[in-house]
Length: 137
Image (cartoon, rainbow, N blue to C red; front, side, top):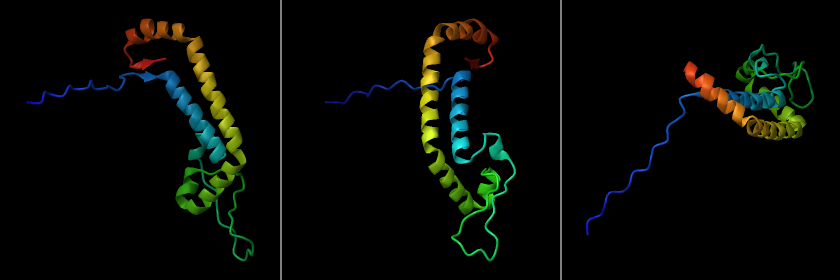
């Protein structure tokens, strides 16, 4: 008996628009992570680095010198081991507040989307779609 053709599944397409609310939520999570791990804002992550190894003649355990407590991308590139040590210390100090912030952010965005569902749909349908910018709320 001949086998029949297998039915093709429908292909999923990526949306052709950018959601402003999803972008804002993602930036909020990125801000929580950078403030908790690097000790700075998302934009401050691209600032000047000042992380350095201890001075010669120091007889204690190997540690780092970080005067402002901030880890930038420049620090991560120039001194990756010291930057990782600083990020680990920041994580241990801030993991509880980061978890709470992420939890409340999730609840806030869910509640806000449900509460404002009809006005957002109206604006997307009547304004954003007519403008044809590829952006929706």
